[in-house]
Amino acid sequence: MKPKLIFSSIAIIGFTSLLLYNFGESISTYTDFDKAAKLKNAHVPGTWESGMEYGFSRETMQFSFYMKDESGKVKRVIYSRPKPNNFEQADRLVVIGELRNDVFYADEMLMKCPSKYNATDVDSYGTQPAAVGVQGS
Image (cartoon, rainbow, N blue to C red; front, side, top):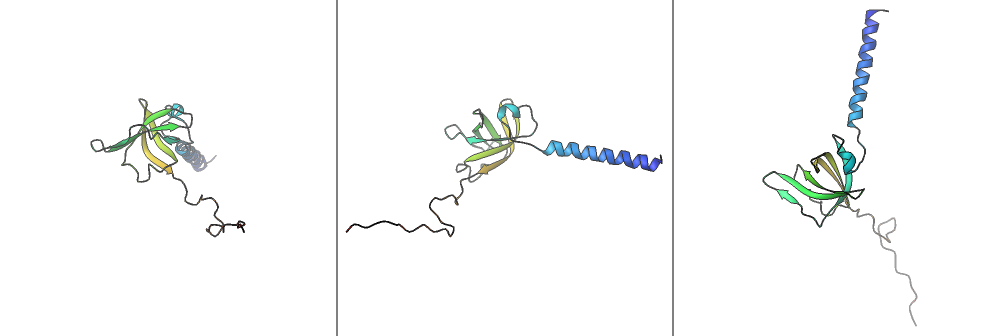
């Protein structure tokens, strides 16, 4: 075999292996807090525990709150940015980060807010149907 062919084959195999390794590291599926403890970058969906303490600290410049994951575990979440404007209206949260010492440190946070398009009794034109009834005589 020619040296150029061997070198180019090794280069292609090396590049493909590196690409697959990096792609595999970037893919993350939703998990819960228990499994997040074993991961470096986890996506944990859940709901905000509104009855527990939350707020923004000007000293650390972090927003912290408590979240319940889909398996029912509640953990403190520290978000490295200010509180999002629509945080209190969110139906569901997804925090992205890592769990350290029983605290989840989120680098990113996604919020699912209730849709304004889920109104009941609205037709395809966005109007309310006319009331239909029999009036008494």
